[in-house]
Amino acid sequence: MERPTGQTKDVGWEIGVSRTIPHGSAEVWAFLTSPEGTALWVGPGVELEPARGAKYVAEDGTSGEVRSFRPGDRVRLTWRPSTWSHDSIVQLVVRPAATGTSVRFHQEHLTDADERERQRNHWRDVLDSITAALARQ
Image (cartoon, rainbow, N blue to C red; front, top):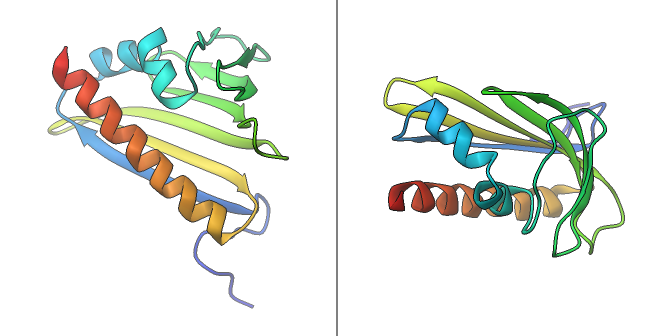
């Protein structure tokens, strides 16, 4: 039996959203792991500790813990907004690209197709905010 797009056998529903941003990867990584950048993709008031198991709680109630942190490359963490009854896994990946830096968000353990679509829109909005913030620097 075929599964609908975005539904997996092991991690439920998932979504991936990416964009190439016209800035160098070191600059993009430094921004995304700064308090200003982290506020845009994890939640306001979060400073991620680059250690497995480090917990965080954002001002808006989003909470989770770092699963892996590879400087200059990727961050994987649990992510649970205060209005959700379940954790999800969010992975941020930063890669050099021909015209700048590829920034990708991948999210797993979503409950259904509707949540998947909401999160697609969420991560697109986050990428818009990141792009705009880097353009102002």
